[in-house]
Structures are given as structure tokens and as C-alpha cells.
Amino acid sequence: MRVPHARPGDVIDVVAPASACSPEAFAAGVAVLEGWGFRPRVPPGLFESSGIVAAPDASRHRALSRALHSADSRVVWCVRGGYGSQRLLPRLAREPVPARPKLLVGFSDLTALHVFINQHWRWPTLHAATLADLGSGRLSQRSLGELCRMVAGRTSRLSVRLRPLNPAARRARSVGGTLVGGNLKTIQSLVGTPWSVRPAGCILMVEDTGERGYAIDRMLVQLVQAGILRGVRALVFGQFTGGREPDGRFTGTEVVARFAERMRVPVLAGAPFGHGATARAVPLGVRAELELGPDGARMTMIWAPD
Image (cartoon, rainbow, N blue to C red; front, side):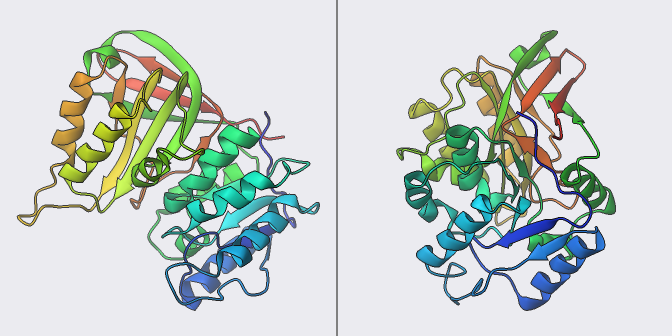
């Protein structure tokens, strides 16, 4: 499927399916979109709650649904991750598939929406900075520029270098499949629900932040024991930030390396996607090709703007 994109002057619907952000971060993000030539449209009552989510479930779903079904926009940009997207999935599952695909932008907790939209509606999505991230100063100018070009349909593919972690990833060959995934903790939280990720025949990408090594291992073990990784073509690790031990060490790298050695499919690391300052936008629900070899690997994602 070709990917929707926004032209200069187009409306971009702003939604908050999960947590809220500060007024300052919100205003800065809106200013970035306006600076790129887009027209952000903000629904009333976006932040109705001061609790763990931005507004009651019904309100968040109503705003998201209107944005996904609106006839005059092609991109839906999420305000922030945090928590709350998964709570909207039963409501989304009860409504008809929108008449035309939209490009959903966001990451972290928004992984629940990526998985649902990729698998149930068969739309591509963009795992990328939330609105609150855009004006935060956290992201590099390169990452922001690339994100703008992708949303505007000015690029058709993305290629990144990866590091092989096991013998299956060092054997020279090509591996292709649809790229799916996102935040590891959110993917784990979907296990056992009707909306669990189903990566059989696909390349699964995962990233996370603030998780210590033992927690990363526990999540990966659960995915294996629940049969989630059965039939996956390859597993790609993005950025894992924070999560240091009390003594300052980060043991997640060792955990992932040991996990990779037990896997029969290619496992690779070093993907520049996640919560880091150099995090790049990555399309999900699109075709990806891995070129593997003993000296390194490359993943190319086919991003075909409509």
C-alpha cells in the first residue's frame, strides 16, 4: 500500500490517545508543524484530565476516531506516549475501517495503535517523534529534517546499518518481510489480548527506555514462551536508553547478546530508532529488506508516498 503524506498547507490532526504534555511542549510542537508548512488542527478538550491519561477514554477515542475518519486530513499526529493507547483498542475494534488510509505518527505507548492499525486495517504507520518531542530540543536536526521529508512524501526509502548478533545474522543472504513492532514493553502488554502483535513472516523491530537488563530479559522470555516469535523472519533491536543498574552499568546489551545466541533467526542491533536523541523515523507496516553478511548488515524500508 502507498503511504499517505501531507502537502504544504494541509491539515494535520493532533490527537492525545495516551498521556498529556505540558502547555509549553505542546505549543513548541505545534510551532514546528506550522514551521514545516502544515496546519495543525487541535480538537476541543484535548487535555481534560490531570491523571495518568490526557482525557477520559471516551473523549480520547472520540477525538482519535474523528481524526482517522476525517475527509480533509491525511496525517494524524499523536501528542505524547506515556500510557493509555491500549485502553482505546476495544473501541477502535468496534468501528468500521475508515474509508481512506491515514498516516499515524507517534511512538512508545502509541505502539498499541501501530500494531492495531498495521494488522487490522493494513495501513502503514510512522514510528516517530510525538508532537511533544518536536520542539523539545531532544532530537537532532538530522532526525527532525528526515521526519519532515517522510511526512511530506519527499523520500521513498530509508536505509540503516545494523550489527549482526548471532550466526543466522552473519550468513550472507537477503531476508525480507513486513516491518512491525515498536516499544517492547507495550508489545509485551498486548500479549494475551485480541490485539497482540503477530509477527510471523515479518521482521520485528523493538526498542525501549528505562528498562533494566533483567526486565528486558523477562519481556523477551515471555514473547518466546507465548509463541509470539514463532515464524518471525528476523528480530531487530533499536535503542534501549536509560535503565542502568544501581552501580551505573547497563546490562541490557549483555542480555540481548545472550538472547540472540539462542535464536535461530537473524537477530540484529544498532537500529537508530527509539527514545534517543538520534532516533530516526521508521515506517511500520511496509516492506523491509535485510542484506546480511559476516561484516555487517543493512536494512532498507520501502516508503512509497501516494
